[in-house]
Length: 279
Image (cartoon, rainbow, N blue to C red; front, side, top):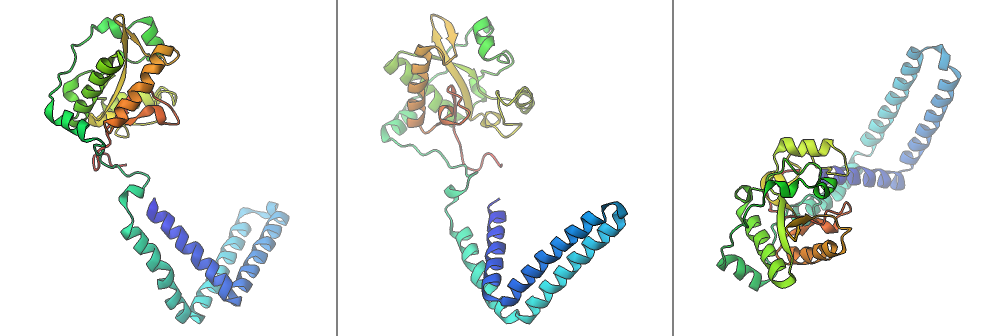
């Protein structure tokens, strides 16, 4: 995508320089515009004369434009040979020397922002919580918010070790410092399930198979436990307060929190490791 944008810039800059420096370029552009207008008028007048005449007129106009461009380039080939490198070299240098983090699809490794957090991750082996009974995820309240949660995987063993360690530490901090008991709603997600969720509507997810960090065990959807029941909806003030705290904790551990997205997903966190997802 970035290369395509660079090429558009080069073509646009070349055209503007050509029009600015060469009178013949401006004259050619004016004649071309006039020819296209005349062609449009002739086309309107002869619309019912048949498709063959229309295609022939278009081909003739396109051929005339190409011949004029080639003739102009040959006539000013010295200036073109000098101007092309002047335009191309800065663009290529900018592309070669740019920081990868500037790219829109760059998947940077999540650096630890805090030495204390890094020490906690390195020095403490946290154990996943005990699995909740299956009927915890099939109540009417849960199905109202997450209707396809029955087929979700909550197997901590399928998660990437780095992500699992940070998520477990987030659970511990939420419990010990904020009083929120948390539960994993879904971790690893198969490509088939990802496509099924995408097919159910854009209000669920816009990502198809292998476009989500769930397929790599690097994402998790979580919620809160209150009196042994799952509380997912952010309409609950207590849960919404918990999501805000959870977002702060997750980001302090180097995780990306879905609560900051345009399509907000308060219970979602992911660990974007560089080189894992090829978009």
